[in-house]
Amino acid sequence: MADIKRVWIEEGCISCSLCQDICPEVFEVPDGEDCVIKGDAPKHFKAKDEEIRDAACDCPVEVIQYEDGAAS
Image (cartoon, rainbow, N blue to C red; front, top):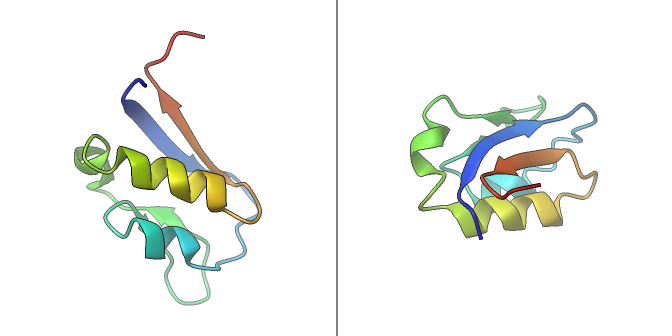
C-alpha cells in the first residue's frame, strides 16, 4: 500500500466528529463546524496512514478523501 500524500474534505460534512475520534492528529471538528484538516497534518500521514484510511472508510457521508502514491 502506497503512502498517503494528500487528505481533503469534500462538501457535505455533518460534523459528527468520528474522524477526529479516530485520528485527532489529522482531523479537527470545531464545535458546530465542518471537519478540517489540521495545518500540521502532513507530518502525520505516514504514521497515521491506517487511521486516515479508517476515518475515510467510516465517514457516514463519505466526504473524507485521500490520495496516495499508488499508480492509477
